Length: 273
Length: 251
Image 1: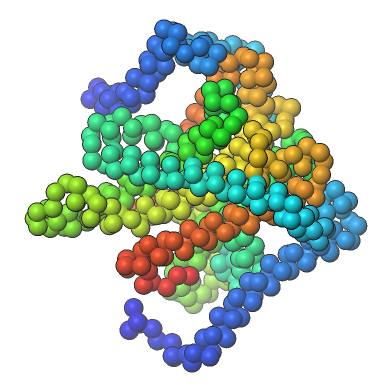
Image 2: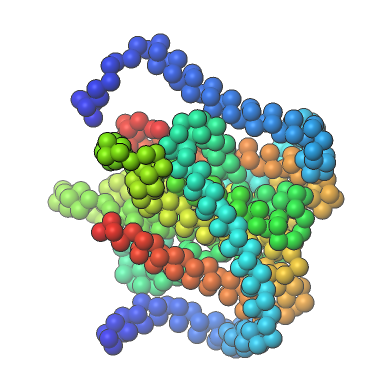
């Protein structure tokens, strides 16, 4: 690739300047959005109920943070989402591996996965409530039910895509089935499995928030719904800001973990846009 | 013909086994019929719901909300994504905003759309529009960005103006990724629709599920849940067929 790069080499300072400009342009547009919010709220075009001032919302978040409600609810929501995600990730990879290697497992689960994946699983929520109540177990069940499908699908595709030569040479060198799986197939399949996990993680958070909104209890979604029931629009807007920040942080953390885990893979050497 | 049918039967036989298992479990009284009414009872309830028109009328209001929100998202999101890919200023302004809204759990917007537009159709259409717009925009953006520069240059040298280049070169190159983005949006539309109707609605599938459940009419509740789930599945399959047709020129 480098040989094709015909652009004149840039001085490090110029490159740093470019990077700084890019970052400041991005920050500027977010700041502009926030300023526009504050100004629109102050303009009197909308009632404070329809759009409370950003400064009021931030003050509300700050007071929630001090009383300990915010850290507690954040911990509950993230904990629930991560636990569900962990179960979906390990179960999804295990099921994907089983479906790739055991014909009977493939025969049984293939139609279930292909029908279950595109279904709106949230429609089953009342059924889950009927069976398991409105507490932690039913919320976790919904999270796993929703986020396991992309992991299964990605694992199957990833294992199909592992180069045959790699497997043949490992076999030739005397690798057993177990070694083959752990040392060759899974590492080679990891980039695509990670892609499935990167789809599953935001999904886990979405469902965590949604089940809290629908079933109540603790957590950011429940707190937001409570505010909504009392027509407390500052609380609702504070909730969406908190949930947005958590979502953003989780997605960024996942991308970081991907780069760390795949540092040996050629994709790490490619420039990330 | 019969060989193909046998193959289908073998492929989907696990579903048949599950259905028989379901019927047996509730017939034999292994679980209470409230928690799991038998499949035949659910089927009978479904026929009743279709007969007295409840399923159709609530389904139509859901279809209207989902269709309107999704259509808006496809048009506005598609245009925005292509503009972001072709004109830098648009990208500088909207790129970071899209990036920030991308990981926000869209269902969290439900109370806000209610604050803005109340409990009726408007708030649900806005919610579905906002939620579905993000994947469409990202698909259109990635697709349009991948349009080959050489094609654009040759179109320009042949005298095509900007609009023409956009329509004849950029849009076709963007199509595969755009269509994939719309597929994600389609799935999201179902989720947002059912979730918002479960929380607040006077009609629609979600409302029907909630009110049947509250009245302890579990046979009918199961019937509606399965209807929504199968509709979501069927919509995805139909869309895939359509996508295949639209991309057939790419061999």
